[in-house]
Length: 132
Image (cartoon, rainbow, N blue to C red):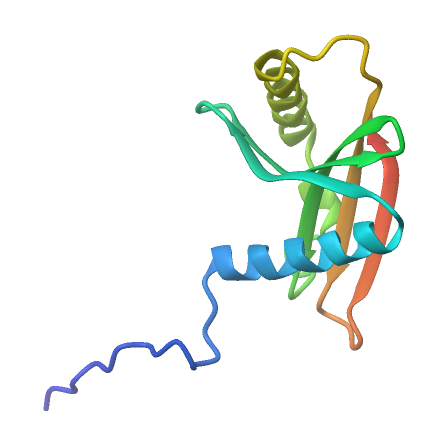
């Protein structure tokens, strides 16, 4: 007996990885705005090198923000997913941001925002100057 596969509706509980990422980034943006940050750009992509989730300003400091979330900690915490390899990519993309925008003498830092959905309510942590 063959079963007809039904398309997944937009109202289903299934969310794509991109949708979950957007939801986490929306939460991070709300957190940053609440702290007085100015959001400059979301999802800045530099060629094939990679992407920075959020570019913001904290006063005069340019802040590159990586957002990580997990529904389960089966494969490690959100913070553990920011590996040395990922950090290197983030640095290269930030260099690209400086290059494209012709920035000189602008102080910057890398922050990480983690969202752990494995607990109720979810925990949100903002790590300032987390990568150097």
